Structure formats: C-alpha cells, structure tokens
Image (cartoon, rainbow, N blue to C red; front, side, top):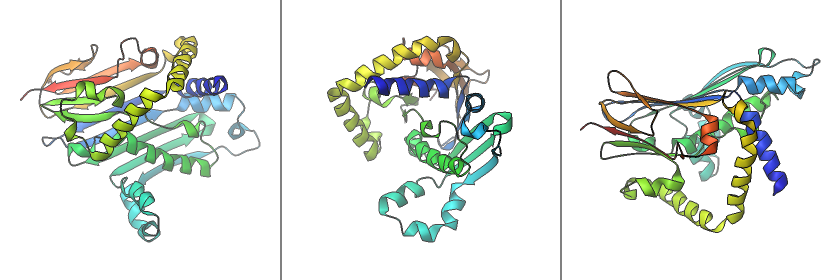
Length: 285
C-alpha cells in the first residue's frame, strides 16, 4: 500500500504543478446549453522534457499536434464498424455524440492544451458529464499515444461530480455528499442512483482506501508552494439573476447572471472546508 501511495503522490504532483483547469457552463432559458472544460498541461510537458523523457530525446522528432475531434462526425464516418461492436462499447461511443475535443501539443515549445465541450438540450444531459468526459479522455490518450507523446497520459481523468437543478438551485456536488444536499434523489438518472448506492457501500467497507487517502493528503502537503501556482476556475452563466452562491469567495457579475470562482489546488487538496464538496447557486424565480 505504501508503494502505491508513493506512486500516486508522484503522479499527482507531476500533473498538478502549474496546471490550469477551467470549467464553464452557459445555460439558456430552458437550462440547456453548452459545457466546456479546458486543461493547460504545458508545465507538465515542459517538466517531462526536462526530466529526460523519451519524447525529449535529441534524436527523436518532437511531436506537434493540433487536432479537433467532432464526435458526431466520427460516429457517422465509422457507423458500420461501430455497429459491429458489443452493446456496451457502442453505448460508450454513442454517448459522446454531442462532444467536441480540441488538443494542441507542441513538444519543442512545451505546449500541451486540451479543450472539451458538449452541447446539451436539457439539464438531465449535463448530470453525468464528468463521467462522460473520461470517455473523451480515452480518445485523447489514443491520439497522443499514436505520437508516443503524452506525458502522464494514464492520469487524464476528471473528478467525479454530479450536476443537479431543483427548486431554482444549481448544484455541482461530490457524489459522496450528494444525499446531504439533494432533496429529491428521484430526479437523478437510474445509472446515477446505482453509482451512488455502490459508492455508499464502498465507503462503508473500504477502510484501507480511507487510510490511503489520508496518507496521500499528508504527502501532498509537502508541495504546498508548488500547488499554489495551480488552480481551478469555475464559471457559470445563467438566464436569470443569481440570488445567492456558496461557498464564499465566488463572484457574481454586475448583471447578476454570471458566477465565477477560482480556487488554488492547494486549498482543494487540504479540504479544510471541503470547498468543492457542494457548489450551489440559487436563481431568482
């Protein structure tokens, strides 16, 4: 277990130092809209080069990539081969039909950026977007591995959160604490309710995992100064004015319809106030 913690700690430091993550959602009057998340992993690319990774070998050509994947087009162009896949694999691919991924990588200049977006017609399509983005990452890994260029490719993942909207209240909530904040779990999709039940069972029975998390947090505290250069930015644009927002520190725009919140990764990892356990915005009627 100790070895696993050491590996996890090294990977997290490698990923988070000077890493910028942004999430932006723009809602229309029907609470459909556009979801966007972006990652600037340029510092990670530079670090990989400085550490003498294979990609930075002087006798190897540096990768330069500027790729846009529109999954609806990809699914259409490969519909015959997709039709022959097992049902579970087909479902994973078809789930991505509303996503677009842009990836820009320039090893020589230490640049590595990724943007992922999804158009959604109803709010329910946003509920599990953090889980769906992991499937997009699989495509990103595939593209990068073709070039043998992605540092930390296996670490590409998004923290799992559930998005809900009830009683004029938007929430971005950690699944572990969702039942504490959501009045009616019946509005969740069946697959989300199944995941929540499994999560509850795992939390109740997996004491070793809790010990690992505690050890990991302790080890990460050694890198506070480095993590201060890393941050997550949340920005949400609503069709109506915002009445209130929590946690403290979130900024409401002058027109009252946009909420912005920037938090250092060091604060997130310390979890002194569980700052992103439940991000909540109440809208006017």
